[in-house]
Image (cartoon, rainbow, N blue to C red):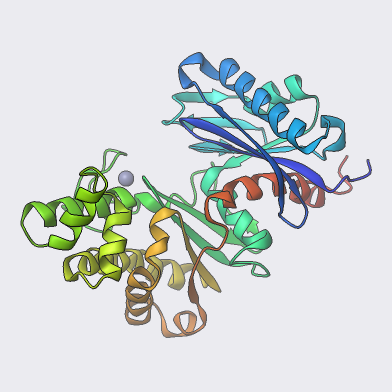
Amino acid sequence: MAEHGIALGIDLGGTSVKVGVVNRAGEILSRGVRPTEVEKGPSGVAENIALAVEDALQAAGMQLSGLDGVGVGTPGICDAARGVVVSSGNLNWKNVPLADLLQRRLGVPVRLENDANCAGLGEQWCGAARGHDHVILYTLGTGVGGALILGGRIYGGATGWAGELGHIRVAPGGPACTCGLQGCLEAVSSATAMAREGREAVAAGRSPAMARLAAEQGGRLDARVVITAAREGDPAAQQILRQAGEYLGIVSAMLVSALNPELIVVGGGASHAGDFLLEPMRRVIAEQAMPGPASIVRVVQASLGNDAGLIGAATLIWRWAVQNRGRS
Ligand SMILES: [Zn+2]
């Protein structure tokens, strides 16, 4: 089949479905957004995805027949080869054959991958990790997602759980994590964790700057407040980011010694903290990883923002075609 050079990327989240028509340069030509409506179950969600797809195609003046296929980034654990969402807490799904559901509805090839893995693939295709085959990616948002790109491909492990970097325990006795463990990286370095630390600092009277910035947005203290206060020179906010960066550095140092990556990419909303977060990471990696691999690895901020997952999902179609060339 001749390639059109256009695919659809889907970022399936717990609250909304974001769709983009994407070309091979990673440019988003048009978009569609619909609510996920998790309560409607897998077939209802698949229908909402199809509607968002139609919105995006209409906006681009295109039809499904003009696409190479559809790639979907989903929260949770995926069996990419079978196109099954094995387990997703956000969607409340177990063993949902989403690729089949969508393929029947849309009539084009559909591929699935975990959402953080898609963000890694997007950054590797046309973002901060372009041209690199050995990459570790973190996404710092509500939680901490991770992706391991080894030898140019996503490493999923024996059963798809590899790359769950947010649930590596880094602070024994630390805060409870959503997974049921304590002191996971997600519990100390996510945007949620930064906001929690910020609220504690304000409650203890240690940060007039964060108190003022939160008051300016109706009392809501999120990671953005912490980052803005840090830029203004607030010591408490800078300390919160330094600590989050040090924990990321501890996990990264182990991964650098184990996997010898060229690049560590930090994405997600909280990555806008930039060097407040990345400098402590670099320092801890230099202190704790083996000197050989530590000397070559670079730690950088992601460059595609919120679109990394969507673009990476679209590229699943082209990667799949290359990996399976000659098989069918
Ligand atoms: Zn956890």
